[in-house]
Image 1 (spheres, rainbow, N blue to C red):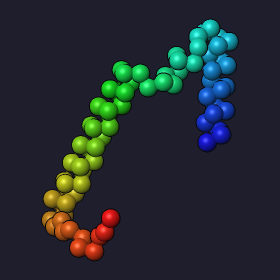
Image 2: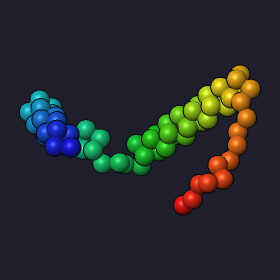
Image 3: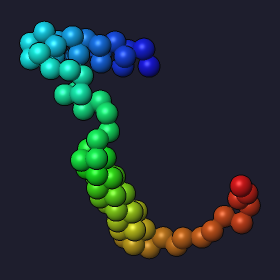
Image 4: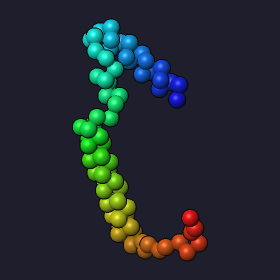
Length: 72
């Protein structure tokens, strides 16, 4: 975790020295556009994972069963 903060600090220093911009140029804060892009990407990747699981189960002729012993 500390390494992420160090990398962020080094990136900010390099950005400040070379481009004279603040840390918001790194995309640190989840602005509306970036949050929307994240959600769209997350939904697409989730749909692809579900499709891969379904396709694998279909090709192997596997059956899905519920676990009766699961508890919250």
